Image (cartoon, rainbow, N blue to C red; front, side, top):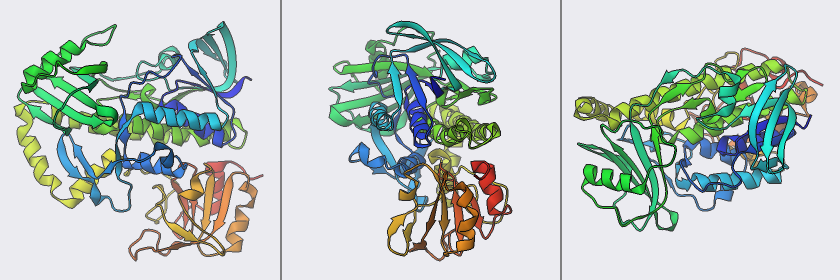
Length: 489
């Protein structure tokens, strides 16, 4: 084998997956068709859950000073995300190009074999391995791996070649996206609607302005090249009355509102993640963030399988857990598109929803949906309120050290937190010590109503979700350990 896993695509999903695989000790080759990063930044900023994911891996500091905000929206209607107590604020105005640069540096430090200018021509799933034909700078050659993962975007070659079903709805409109220098426009961070359409304006570092334009009645086009800046200038003038012709475009693109999701995230030894598995209107900046979280869910599971620590059936939980997340993502982005991009006929609906958002429970529900904090996985049942939910960030005090639940997740391993110093409990985990870090420490500063109050111990998966808790889990600890980490040594 040339590698345990071949990842196709060096965007945020592919790079994050490569990093997760390397943290878990799996060999990985990343094949990227482009010889160098484009510098284009369709994704912009991080949701609260992605901020947590990066904090779990110790990556947040690599992004420098990050501007954060609790101001958000649902379909262009303002929502106060501050109602999400204990959560990171969302990061604003971080270009995807910067995110990719940070992740690329990280995965190279971890020993990832990243090959730019290498395009997958074809592949065959032989049942026991995958054979991949690659065209690189030195010609065509063949690679072999245990698994192939397509992180190659909405037009995924891997998805098409493997024959994944990709049902959904075709685009009904065309929208324009551009980063432009030399403009002095008032920010419209959550967008503004006009009789003729909708526009968004966001300031970026270096005097760059992000523009998004949707002009109603603009049908989708099959383009072989990016649109011209003149098209945006003309449409912007028709919708807003403003002249932006003096701007200097850095790059221009177009996109639609097509909504599709594969029916299965894995077929044999071929797996999909990110936009290769789901495409949607980029409402609320959720696309790149969901893709990164796909990778974090998949990485530790795939590494455990290829290293012989867990059965291949563990990979079934990737589809079982992430397909519903993707389905819900498509649902909420379609709803936001109807609210944001439709005409006056939906104004009564906007007015009603605006009233409902004033109720904190409604705001919390919508904010959690858009930020990824509502995600919950099935873990075998039980009464503990955190089962299947993300592990909150809490300070921990041990016999001679202080740390936090977030810092303990930097290594990307499983984690047993023993809050009550129970040697018998820790002894049950010894057979998984090569996969699980065992830490005895007590949480400090918990509020009386904290979901962790009265908890004796928790088992945290490498992706940060709680798989077992005491008291409250229906399964015993060894059963949960074997389910998520394979048999004991």
